[in-house]
Length: 113
Length: 112
Image (tube, rainbow over all chains, first blue to last red; front, side, top):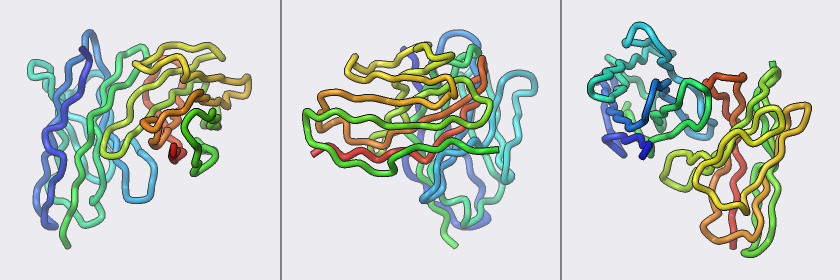
């Protein structure tokens, strides 16, 4: 069955700490991978995406993610978080045809100032 | 460039009633997907419309139906509402053949 698993439901960090959010997926065929972010009171926004090519992708606001095909993983990283990164982060997987994107349950990140 | 808009923002219905939620896609996007996001969960795929036809469906019963119009606006209809239908309903538009989606703010549906 197609699924996306995010390892942590809640993460609390202090400013300047490094962040890594885990994401593993089960999805047949060639995949497109995404991280979306939802800031408090705002709608879902695309943080970064992987379609093909370099498995290390860079997104907005200093975030990056690495696609490891052998591990079916797409972990999100940021070297130094800021208070403004407090948000909910969703990993998502879709097929290359643009149909049926599957989302993980989300990770709530709280960054202490 | 206009983003994805949804209406209404909030809605309260009672069990057994019917509801219609509306979405206006981002300019130029001909594909729209609808998601249900229950509290504490990620968005769950309901269905996708492309060129006014349903292009695929998730694990939702037939009482969830949709329409897409020539101007790419769309509707989500839910019949015979159940308490578990209480959720945030998200609309996302994209270009044909891609799944880089742009999300609207959602409609919060409460079923009493």
